[in-house]
Image (tube, rainbow, N blue to C red; front, side):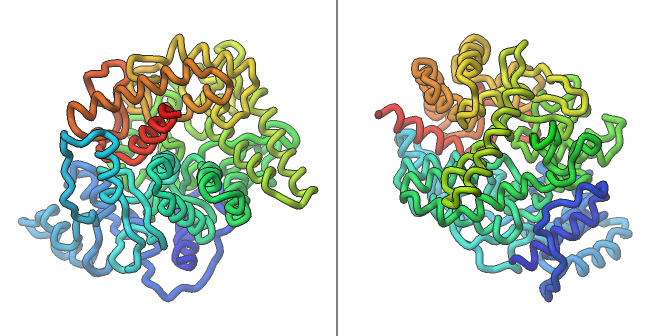
Length: 536
């Protein structure tokens, strides 16, 4: 597997037309491999014009369907057949795809929602449905990257494991006593770090140009709470490798070359990070949508594509926080922004490594890294005018002015100054709190990561952050509103969904590139974890 992914990452870097300073992870190496070259490539690279026609003609309503399908023969054979048959007057593109590709692999089950189940019973019945076994057959995987241990998928169109989703799913697994599955998922992510050099967005070849918010340290913390501190010794190397991935480029940045990969120079020995996808072409899974956005923007196609892909790395695809005008997707400027959420998570990663490094000089070096980042977050990402942790444009020095729940991450990770945490708590209560939980942002754009939607991970982090800083009453109010919203929707439709409308609590949610998904991993996890808090 190491051979497959290393060659694939090299192919990505050579095909992305990146600038000389943006050469990707240092772990990429040139090696020889005897396996089929097409296992090293994403579907848009393998199937070229066929891929573009399928996506632009919307042969499938959801662009993710085709990239998850499994070819029945080699890409070369399929493309030869396509070139021969497409010239015919009676050529049917949909029929051709159905002839040469199998549907996305989704294990069959006889699960059905039952109104007589309580919400916790429903979630308990869902765990086996959402759990995927360890993969053994590379040849039948299509774009799927095989993993050695079982894992839980979110549900709906999301047929693979997702990085940041999984931490919140694991909170629920731990609450449900499924400790072995928590361990297996941590081992899978450690495996990806070992084999690839980082944890990709998801275990698909078309996700190998980006990661997601770095929650691996939180996963290790969770596992340690179940098994003891020996867990930190077991996974310390992977924690350090995760940090190395996000900091790749730090040696090359300076006052005259401020940004390389994820790293942005702020001052001598002071760095902050941004979201940055190494690819510069439309996302394979959202190809048509990205092409249309790029056309609308009338901007450089590679620049816009990277901004879109980098927003996907953040998990917030999409939100006003990334838009230059605060309204329109085509004005997206993700890589120009310094996000408080990412930097708070990296502070936690550095602090965790420091806490569990035994060699004193090394431990002190990690402590200095964490302290420098803490100071930089307070200096550069706290807006004294809005009294909020905001995204800041490093190219102009200006705050974006858009308040979002990314501002609660410094409370969640403990990096916030006490007086700043107090201001965040006031604003949460005055401006973000709605009948069904917390609004994701104060903007209304129709995008799924804006008002009126609320998302499980943000509710949990706001709750936990408020608790951490002593705002128990507000934390309890947030938790109760969110759980009651979940329960109300479940009573109406007998399902858990990935996001909820927190303003009109008679509805589920809406906005974004795809319909509301049911399942749903992190919704299940956060609800169960909050339920255990309710019992304390």
